[in-house]
Length: 211
Image 1 (spheres, rainbow, N blue to C red):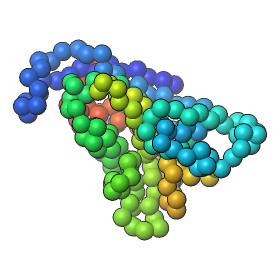
Image 2: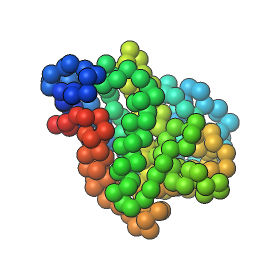
Image 3: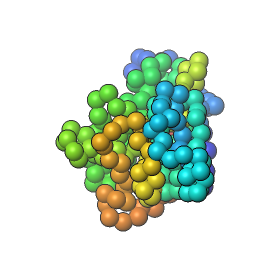
């Protein structure tokens, strides 16, 4: 279920880098997790609405981890992407990096005829972000970066069982919904097909070649 893709940096033509094309240790990992809630280092444990016994009864693991952001869910039918990049090969700007990850998701979801957008001040990718009461998050993001090496990444809901989100306050954001490709389209989408689109759009946005 997991996938580990090596990345080759392409020679820059925009003046930001004079590196020649060369293989690197940069990686893009894909996986699907068993049901688990993860709480970022700035998150509030109160955003988990179940106690330990209830979590155990529902078969959901729970971990506090060192990424940014608050509480989120990972589980079957969701593509979790972990780019492990040396941003010195790209651009040493975390804002740029997060907006680039968002752009990969926006382009991928657009291939299914859905228009996604950003929500000011709320990292991730949304549908109808500017329509009060209709905001629906389709992809959560949380990263960590040490010495410009990135960790953690994004979670794109493809065929995810969205009921799991009823037991948390997703990303610590009150009053907004979570959605998936399957919910928006009305049918299950092949996960491997979505991965291929993600890889293609990752190459476009980050100007790299996946090998």
